[in-house]
Length: 470
Image (cartoon, rainbow, N blue to C red):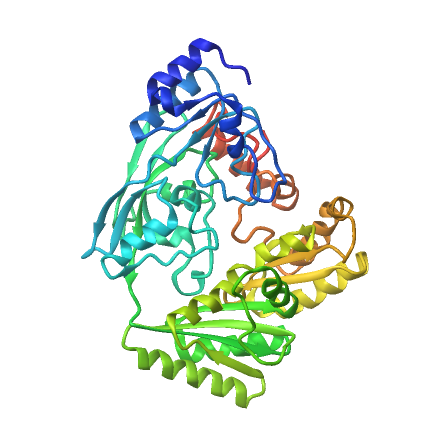
């Protein structure tokens, strides 16, 4: 896209001379996503400081039919934030925490607020914002909501959609929708909020949100358990769910290969157990009553699992530092794959009861397709979301391996769909899965989505060619 100097000057007048960037070296960090799969281009980066400025930008862009891409922390993994000649609207300056309502257990934050800062603001009032991601130090609330981010707390607290009560959104014509409601019950027509959450910026730009908060747990126990198989993990999950109920706040599955490479490549990581096991689960149990209550539940869970032969060994974290170290093992697993060479990723979900069958069937299928591959399948066992990542064979050529991305995806995704699962559990569609979405969803669903897109954005300026084809 080529912008006239007159138009650039009009955009500059909206945000100020220092917040309208045309230098390509300065724009460059905003043009590539974390895994390096997509490299974009943009003639202009705008950094508005208020909702009013976002509104003015979008209104001007819509009048001239200029496409825009909203961008948060640029941590997305499906290319939804990468521009293709579009103007980038960075929300990073809009990072105010407008209000923390302690009695109402909600907070109002702007879209550019970094997730970790929102968590810290809640903690100052002895409250918890339970969305937790590996990228929480850089990802932003607007991006979390636009991708309906999940993370490790979904089991107990739900994903981003369930943690949001209201939104403020700039629509594609520049109008501002003030939906910053904080009502638990509001049955007055269509729920517009849910259209924007997970829409990846294709229907409008989220500029602020009302987020749900919960009490900080008084007691929290973290356990690291070794076991023989995903089937044993499923049995342990059912024991934990029965004994702990809503106190079960984390249940993560990890393979031995993932543990080995994390210990190898991530400073400070070590195996909490003396002997290796084929699989592990990381279990977190929280209590609003006392530390003893959480410890009693954790011990009861492990003893029953051990006595029934599902848990082979376990370690209980004895300090906050150990708890953090246990979680760091799980959260660093994606990063640890990078030094191992190419990795073909899958963010999938299947019904919880089918997780063991999926892992076995998929592993047989991809190993048959290519010998020597190393499977790092880990993730949120408690909600059926598995990050099924395949590392290249040792000493293989990285680019040659990555050239098999599409057929490898098809093998895994076909198995997922046969099990009534989803090819995108928490990362979104973006560019990576756009064409596949059109191929696998019922035509009436695609038609309805396209109708919604056209109604909201008839000129097609909002994050074009993401989620849906033009």
